[in-house]
Image 1 (cartoon, rainbow, N blue to C red):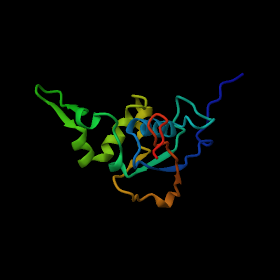
Image 2 (tube, rainbow, N blue to C red; image 1 turned 45 degrees about the horizontal axis):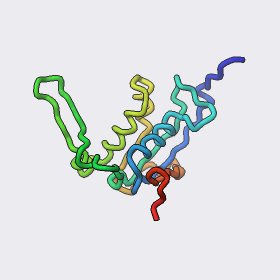
Image 3 (cartoon, helix red, strand yellow; image 1 turned 90 degrees about the vertical axis):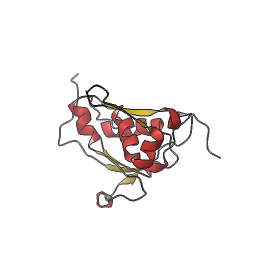
Image 4 (cartoon, one colour; image 1 turned 60 degrees about the horizontal axis):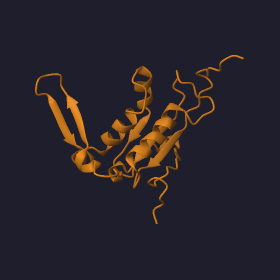
Length: 152
């Protein structure tokens, strides 16, 4: 039996739109990363980019559980002495909510050129509007509950 490897002609990319309002960051990021990689398709190949495009709207209404909003920090290091920059997630969520989702999804992708190719298919917008309506995106249903507890 031969191993199946999809041809570039066989790859069909759909566009999905995700509403992040009220969604928990980590749970949303895992489901987005799976769609970007193509793990939800039967033709998935770990060495190829067979995934779809994902548009995330309402990124400013994302939820972080526990005390992560006050305690979690984005660390950036310039490489120089004293060049460590710490940005708290509450400030990051206020000023650049798209970076919060992009960083969470990026951490779940491969750390190589395949991961860099896959992350380009993610579009994140703070508000409810996006400029990709011409692509005809379908709504991707994301589970917004915390560990099986439904919001009543």
